[in-house]
Image 1 (cartoon, rainbow, N blue to C red):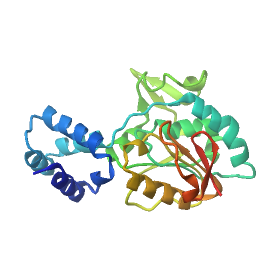
Image 2 (cartoon, rainbow, N blue to C red):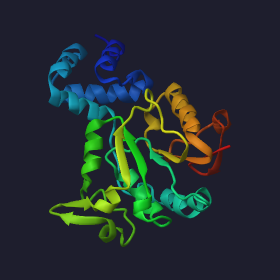
Image 3 (cartoon, one colour):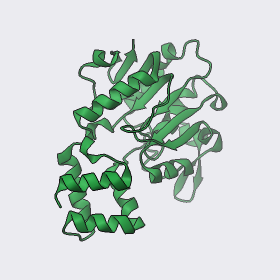
Length: 255
C-alpha cells in the first residue's frame, strides 16, 4: 500500500482528507508515527487503526498538530486589543467571534481575556471549534501547565485561573464565555455573520487548494467590515480574490 492509497483509506475512517495537507510535511509526520509504533507497512498500521482505539486516537491527535499556548505571538494580540477591536466593536453590543482551529483552547480563552477589556465576561460568547475531539475535550476541561501560561500578561493568572496541584484551571466565568464544538474546516458549514474569525497556525499545513477553501468560506462567514486574523506565516497573497483587504499585518477586513 502506497501513501496515496493510505490517505484515501484514512479519509473513510476519520473524515479527514489528508490530500488537502502538504504531502511532504504530513507524510513525514505519519512515517515517524508508524515507526514509533513499530509498524513497517501502511497497510498493517491502517488495519490496527481500525480496531485499536488508543492507536486511532493517537493518530488523529498527531495529524491535527495541536500546539498552542496563551497569548501566542503576544505582539499580535496587542494589535487586536489596541488597534482592531476599537473600530471593529464600535456600536456592537454582542460580538460574534469564532476561533476556528482552537486546538486545546488556549486561543479562545485568550480571545475572551482580550475582549474582557471591552465587555464583561457574561456578555461574551466565543465559538471555538477544532477537528480533534480529544483537543476539544481538553479545552472544555480548562486545565493547563505552567508552560502554557508563560506569556500571560501581568495580573491575568490571578484574575482568570486557580491553581490546582501542578496545573492552572480556567475559572468558571471565563469558561462560560466559550462554546466548544468539533468542526472540520474543509468539510463542515461555517458559522455566519461573524465579527471576527481567528484562523491561526493551521493553514501552514494546508495545500493551496485547501487554503482557497478556508479563505473563501471564511469570507462568506464574516459580516461586512468583519476581520479575519491569521497566523505569523499565513499572509494571504491575493486577499481581493476573497473580498478581503489587509488592515494590519495578519488582519484582513471584509469589504
